[in-house]
Structure formats: structure tokens, C-alpha cells
Image 1 (cartoon, helix red, strand yellow):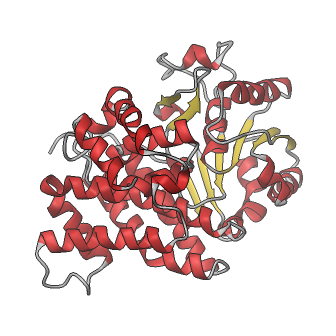
Image 2: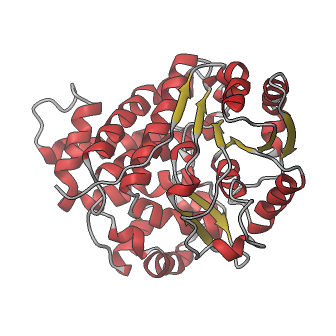
Length: 387
């Protein structure tokens, strides 16, 4: 077996109402005196920021709030958050919200180091940087950002840029399922399918698949799969919400150590060019990519199928089990209420050649980790299937 290097959070708390009950305690464990909460306006409106502020203030930690994060945060937004943290000499950075808020917080946690602009560190070795204590509190069960060491932001030219280093791994992940109870159905569905893709791509990664990530991906997928329809149809089921949130975190740990692949490669242009939310974009292309991969990945998809559909796949050949697995994913998407044709999202067949070209020329690294290589024509065909 090849060598393995594996990274994960030092401390994970998975408990309902844990933000209210334990955030202040954890902050004092890190000797915090001044915290910045990085979030978006929607999370502020839900009252979650007030809960976090109160918990910190009761622990004698002063608090400032930056709630201007937007999806796929541009560098300018990140730098504004850094400015607020610097001005208040914050010694604890908290990302509260979806992946964009947590990804922003990861970069803000580097602010004591010598750089004037985030642009200065995009292609720089920052392994020697100091990082302030970083807490991640997700409000969706999908991105896994609370357990990953990658931050994806938008450069000034509109392209997605990633800072990818264990240096930015959150120290503490607080998984409080009460924060996901108010999620609308479409966000619940999109983020859950995103997390499932993380598990599946980690388990089938051509380059970094390993026994630790396999175990986490398998368990994460089981938790997500078994609770998906519950959270869509009974959104107030706190136990199902808690399982989805933990499953998403397990998925995040798995994929950041094993890598994602072509589903992400095909989804990124949809998000960047047409502003399709990341989880929804992954859900759109996942079945086409998985079907394309069958000639190389059938045994692995069959293993996943038997783990999540043991009764339905009993006695099936690997190919039948793998095909049934992909069919069920397609049913999840179609029954979720999400749009699942490009034409429903104002993407025409005329747009497809440019999208395929971006995949091949910009996201080749994600094709390299896919179980099977893809040509420009094959990427085009996958898009055309869902046109």
C-alpha cells in the first residue's frame, strides 16, 4: 500500500444546541478574548448570530460581526473581513453559515501574516504561516467546509481560485443540527446531494483513495442516503438533520484527503458562468459522469450500492448493482424538486461547447482524479444528455 497522509479537525462537536451551550466554553479553551463571526446576511436574519454572540459574551469574549459574505466570495469581500479582524485584533475566527462563510473565515485566520492582498497568497507556499484559532459552524449539511483544508474564492477576473493547505483546517467544528432546521427544501436537497457526491468521488478517486477516507466516505454516504427523504419530507426531524450534518462532515474529511473528480470538474463552469449553486450543479451532472465511469468503476459503485441498498441489490451482479445505484441517485434528484435539465436553468445547447472547453482546459486536475479519462467530446456528450 502507498503511504498515506491524513488530516482532520482536532475537535468535532456533534450535538443539538451545541453552539449555544458550548461555543463560549470552547472559545475560552483557546484563550480567546476577541472573536469575529463571519457569516452572511441571511444567517444574521435567522437570529443565529445573536445566539453565537451571547454565548461568547457570557464567556467574556468580545465580538464583532462581518455578515457581508456572498456565494463564491470575491477577493474584495474576503479582504474586507480581514480588515475588520485586524482593526479589532481578533484572536478567534468563527465561520458561521455555508461553505462561502467558512471558506472566507479560513483565509481571515491567516491575517497576522505579512501580506497586503489575498492575491499575494494565492500561488504562494503558506505552510509556514501562523493561523489563529479557527472555528467552523455549518448551517447546511452539504459542503463539508467545516472539515476541509481548502478555501475557494472568486478572483477579480471571475475565475475560481483555491487555497489548498492543511494550514487552514478548522481547529473546531461545531455540528449543531438545530441550525439546519430552517433550511428550505431546495437547499436541503442540493446540499445533501453535494455531500453524497463528495462521498462517492472520494471512494472512487483514482489518485488518493485510501482506507481511512474509504471508511469515512462509506459511513457518510449511509447516513446521508438513509436520511435524505426524511429531511425533505419532515424537515423538523432533528435526529435526521443531525445525521445529515455529521454525514456531510464525514464526507468533507473523506474528499479533502482523497480528492473529488469529474463531477466537480463539470459542475464548476455551471456555477461560474450561470450562477448555479454548487450543490445543485453537482447534482445536475453526477449521474451522467457516474454512468460514463461504469467501465472503470463498476466494482466500486457496486460496493457503495450494497452498503446503502443491501436488500435491493442482494444477488445482483456488480454491473446491475452499480446501475441501480446510479438510478436511485437520479430518482433522488428528480423527486427533490430541483430542476434537473440545463434548459430549465436557461442554459442552451449553444452554451455547451464553451462549457466543455472550460472543463478540459481549466479543470484537468479533476479529470485526472476521475476513475476514467474524458475527452472534450465525451464531456460535451454528458452535458448534452441533460440539456
